[in-house]
Image 1: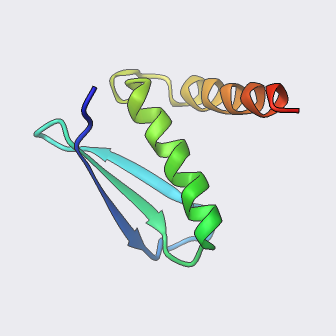
Image 2 (image 1 turned 90 degrees about the horizontal axis):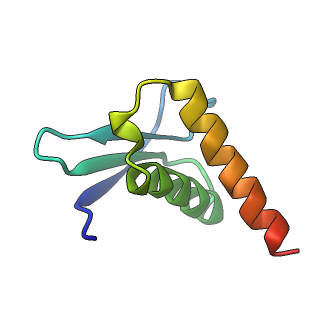
Length: 82
């Protein structure tokens, strides 16, 4: 599966936002990442954004369910590594 995406480092207007993803008209994605984050934190939020893309979350309606599923999957992965 090939995914076309662009990553942009930006300064969000609020420190609460670490990343955002936009699905473009040509089915590519733009991933916006907070520029002030450390390199390791930028990698972490990039991975989180990429997981949303791979799960086709942009064709789903309920954002709360999407985030719950995403964080549950991350927690399960972390626990399996212990």
